[in-house]
Length: 402
Image 1 (tube, rainbow, N blue to C red):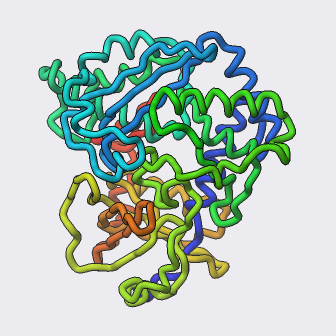
Image 2 (spheres, rainbow, N blue to C red):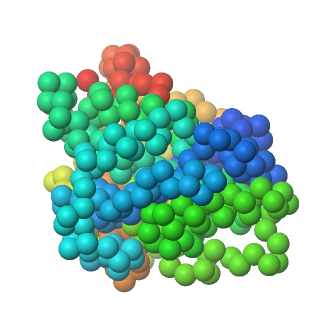
């Protein structure tokens, strides 16, 4: 790997352009405080808007221990503890205060699935940190449908149950208040090429956090030019929503602590030709053998493929991880065709390793790259592209391998 050129931060460019598409879809551009304010006003004026929040068992592979759905007039449509049928981690209990004993006699997700469907069906669902809570719902729904509809259950646990995918399409829209609030707050991060996510500052229970989101929406809608001097910074308003941190996002619990420099790690210095900071990872190690898949309360290891990009202007090396080969090949090939100084790329067998570092109060992510496994083969790209197209679904951000 030492002969691999210095690589371009395509991840930052990709993230930036993905957000631009989000803002464009609501009639504005990334960075528009007024657009975020207008968005909040339309959300509050829409009688079909509901706010959803969950409290969970842990940081990674989480199940719900509490769920609430609130209408924009403050009416609670659903508010209940849930028995997750799995232990609640000590770290999660430290945040939301919910213990295994508290939920021992609570209903399961299956018990409240019909009520949740009724509360969200055809609605505009607003969530603070949308992707995390949607991931929790997908996991709960998949477990539920695999138990109640065995005939259609896929053989692979990587592939969602068809009923789960259909259910996720029942709401009219899923929208992220955290991204909009970040743009309204206007704290630009040159490191991430985007606005810094802000802590919600809620009560760390589902109904209380729904009320906090509602308050944020009113703040945004009534202050079109952004926060005033009277607005306390949510970044200093207390601890972040630890149980709501996305395990795949290595920026940390509330996206305010960037990964530590790779130059601090001797294994990273041995593996990489530069001691540059990685946009997505705390550590990047080249290894002879990849670690095995692992899923626990405190650690997740997923094996897949990593795409590395080489740039022309001395940019730091950048790696993007995919669970499947097809999107990895397509993403690397498309980047090579872009106008962002990407002059080469490589695709390697890899493992994405995330664990909870209690001392840092955030996730720490390591990318393990298997030495000597560049998988590019232009002679086989056509069937790979065909498989990728077959596995793409217009209503989902996920690639479904056949």
